[in-house]
Amino acid sequence: MTFNVRTTQRSEFLDITGEIRKALTSSGIEEGIVTVFVPHTTAGITINENADPDVIRDIQAALERMVPWQHPAYRHSEGNSAAHIKSSLMGSSVSITAAGGDLKLGTWQSVFFCEFDGPRSRKVWIEITDGKKS
Amino acid sequence: MTFNVRTTQRSEFLDITGEIRKALTSSGIEEGIVTVFVPHTTAGITINENADPDVIRDIQAALERMVPWQHPAYRHSEGNSAAHIKSSLMGSSVSITAAGGDLKLGTWQSVFFCEFDGPRSRKVWIEITDGKKS
Amino acid sequence: MTFNVRTTQRSEFLDITGEIRKALTSSGIEEGIVTVFVPHTTAGITINENADPDVIRDIQAALERMVPWQHPAYRHSEGNSAAHIKSSLMGSSVSITAAGGDLKLGTWQSVFFCEFDGPRSRKVWIEITDGKKS
Image 1: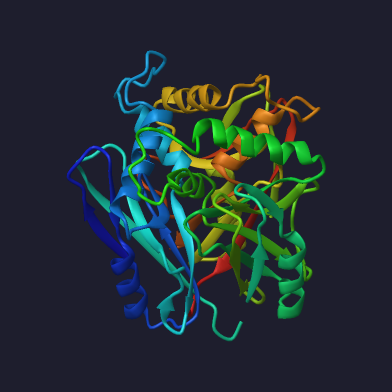
Image 2 (image 1 turned 120 degrees about the vertical axis):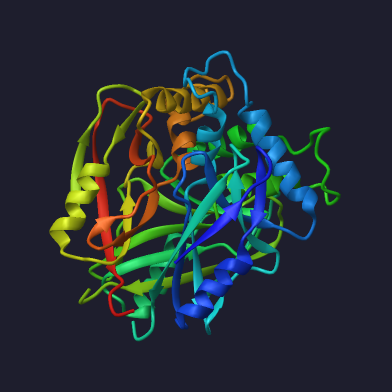
């Protein structure tokens, strides 16, 4: 399964938990592992809190301090090295358990698509491994 | 499967390899993928060395230098933004192969629950996908 | 499945996408999840761009700025704490979808073995979960 994401800023974390839940429901799979994969090298994916939006703002700001958008040592000609580095720091996939046909997440956990070089039109791929009878 | 972890310090890495092994044994599954998931947004999970405890101390100290507990830019009112950021840097799950009913890890690898906002009572979830006959 | 990697520098990112593709082909599995696991605590694995080699150079240099090889606070006696820290930052595994017998990666994505304490002879483990009929 695939769905599209539309980002509107250079750095933006979008809560995609609802889309992943919908994909799981439409698969009809009750138990197993949901692998959510981002097929981009200047975006990533992570799980964190969405109750207070300042959590995500603090994560984005901390990544910017660790990996500033501009640095005299960058050599990549497209000028978006920071986005590539943040992509590898967050990672390109998350694995989540499905149980009872629902996504098993902790109370405060949401899944975020991490845009690091937007605005762009992006894709998210979902693969669900059926764990039933196994 | 679920087990509990009790942390006693704000930042603490606990070796949970034994608990994961026990869960695999009790599942009776011989081959497949063991997904270990942390359902918290101020904790994480990672694989690293447990032979010399200074390795883990150096990892914790390096994370603290990259993401200090206090920073004038943090906006999250609970004051634990650093824990959220470290959680995303380490990640919320690891995937390990099971073979011959045992966890396949490299010689020096142990699995660590990473507490970043303790002390707390925490949970770890384990999902095992049977890879037999597949 | 296992294959060996020979690194020639202390810090080196090797594109192992071809080896993973070969393993998938020889497994005969058409659909599922390919888990690529690095059984080392001073190496890691990540997905990023291989079109411009400067992307990888910029990632390596940024990791070096975040986690310098030498730091007065390191206590691990082997002197390779930076390699352990980078290993946890990049992670020990990636999960990739297989579809139609081929690895499903984004246009610009390649899989890189990340050496952080070379030169060494290293191993990569691949486990493929068959997703057919599920």
